[in-house]
Image (tube, rainbow, N blue to C red; front, side):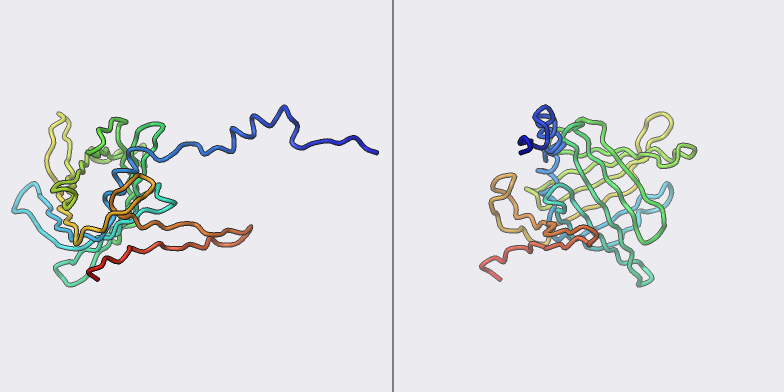
Length: 222
């Protein structure tokens, strides 16, 4: 009769238990990003170096994905010629480094942009610096700042150009106004705004992910 053996060996078990733990957990950044969730009206103002500002209007839907760890932002703008342009962004926060990272792409070009914070975060303001994708072409130095105003009803996003002397010039302002305040509910971050989340339901080897969207809860007022 063969001796009983167990797998994995006992000397490996502690290491295996450690390796199965998630690398990090959502932090203060996810708590702030969750407050951006909802449907918004957008007023975009472009400030050229010369001439008057140019204003365009649009709308935006923002929602948490990957079990509430990332924010996806879908913008649509109406152009003067009657066409529409779209922008999509993914925003995340690494609780280990205390850094935000955003990736954006749009319908006007085939390039993508990446921005990242410097590791300082006060819980309210997001400050992102442009990160060059091509080391041989660093591009223009820019910084973007975003924060909530009016008890979470307005999200103000401003992007600045930084010259060689460190001076900042306002390039773009996005004034994003919430269409309706979602009802409060208990979430992983405590009692706060309701957060619709896209969750992975099932995945089999070699199969595509199946997702389920948890919709906004309907209020009593319809």
